[in-house]
Image (cartoon, rainbow, N blue to C red; front, side, top):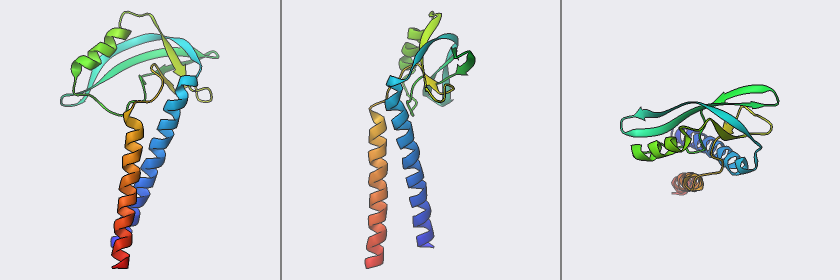
Length: 145
């Protein structure tokens, strides 16, 4: 039973690590993505849980004659406790008719307004790798003793 639990957690950890790595790679590469002008359709503060906030910016854009609508502001994986931070983000968007939209060259449906990665993203991957190594070490120590 312990082996099953360990390998289950290991598989989940490795899967999460691969997913975060893919997001990190896309975030880093997004600075090189082509950009087009997009139209702001809606801006509001989204509160996914009590006292946690995310900017919701819905925008449309056209790539090679195809229309797309997105709500992806950036590659940030976190919410914030600071409502004023989100209001500041929205204030930079509100009132603009057009905004720059960065889209994935192979999958233009994937887009962001602010390209690049946040400082916290590599830290998450390092923590996840450390947890996997610690779990594996504990498992190995149990086998030896």
